[in-house]
Image (tube, rainbow, N blue to C red):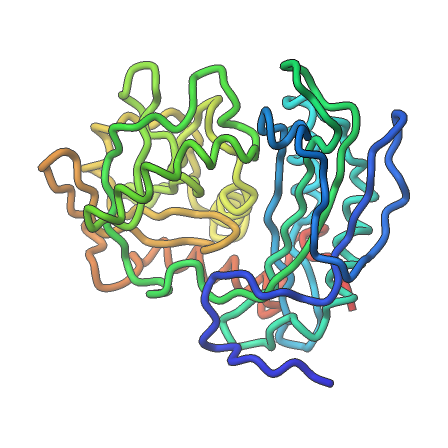
Amino acid sequence: MSVQLDWSNLGFGYIKTPYRYVAHFKDGKWSQGELTTDDKVVINECAGVLQYAQTAFEGLKAYTTEDGRIVTFRPDLNAERMEQSAARLEMPVFPKEQFLKAVDMVVAANSEYVPPYGSGATLYIRPYMFGSSPVIGVKPAQEYEFRMFCTPVGPYFKGGAKPIIIRVSDFDRAAPNGTGHIKAGLNYAMSLHAIVDAHAQGFDENMYLDAAMRTYVEETGGANFIFVTKDGKVVTPKSHSILPSITRRSLCYVAEHILGMTVEHRPVRFDEVKDFAECGLCGTAAVISPVGKIYDHGREIDLPSGMDEMGPVTKKLYDTLTGIQMGRLPAPEGWIRIIK
């Protein structure tokens, strides 16, 4: 029986799908892993993840392309980033090839939940790993679970590509030599109060500055920044505490190698922001969300691109990357993994 969902009106939320993947780490090695229909996770009350937040995760998407194929976008980079996250949290690295096989299995088993081409929706895939064995002293767990589920989602921001309003946050997202560069649950927990407060004050997101000097732009709670100068250069902030966004890396490649633009990946002082022509937030969930206004403690920075639509350069980047993802444009070698 085919799945009946209002694909064009999906929110960015969880919808249970039939199959998920699970593998266990015990006695120094990972199990082969398998699909299961059981969506419940059962762990000890003293599990490492519950006591000391020993967990990491990833996020990627599957798409239906223009010619009807089901594909994923650069899942090898998600596998590599999760390896880095696990190593930093003293968790066993989940093998890259097993990660990729798990993605293929989960998407194929839930293929009826991959939204149709042109609906604006995608299948969001969430791999995650956590310490499952009891830990009462502050130390790494001995046993772990790696799991992966998927859910069909609509656009991350309900307004789609409509420019958003953000504020400069008084909170710090990550310490200079902390864990801001890995995709750990603890980083996102730290941002929850700040984003709830931002929403209560009428803002869509936070702009975090560096914790040491509060001079340089870092990222938001869940996306990297991308700026465009008035002479058409693409600029992205560089910092050891910024998560290396796969979307940002892909957009920079598109800008430089496909669109012939100059790209700078460097520290960006906050006092430069007022001089940029365009600003966007980029990540797996939204691809690019254009920013129209930035509030800094009563001072308003209005981006020249305005509040009506994406700036022209941002739109060209967005259209090119989504065109590659959806099969409308040729992809660089290795970017698209065909599931079926």
